[in-house]
Image (cartoon, rainbow, N blue to C red; front, side, top):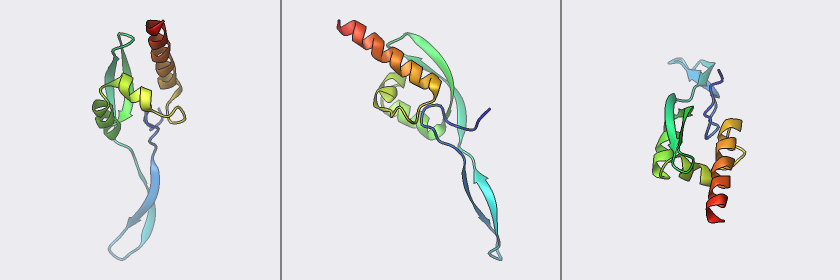
Length: 97
């Protein structure tokens, strides 16, 4: 299972662990991934995802999964999240017509 956020695309980054004697060794900074269930109001379904904790705060700020996906860039979304976004857009287009 990849250590990548399904919504924001946050991945591990590489940095240095610096000792007291200033010796530098490589290390990885892993994202704080949590498994959550997010509900889409437009589709009336719940989706289980592994997302970063900071992304969860942003989802709450935008008013839920639908609001977050409306403003999210498609390049950062996983294939599953992109399908959910397109389903929400299709549902909104049908509701307008």
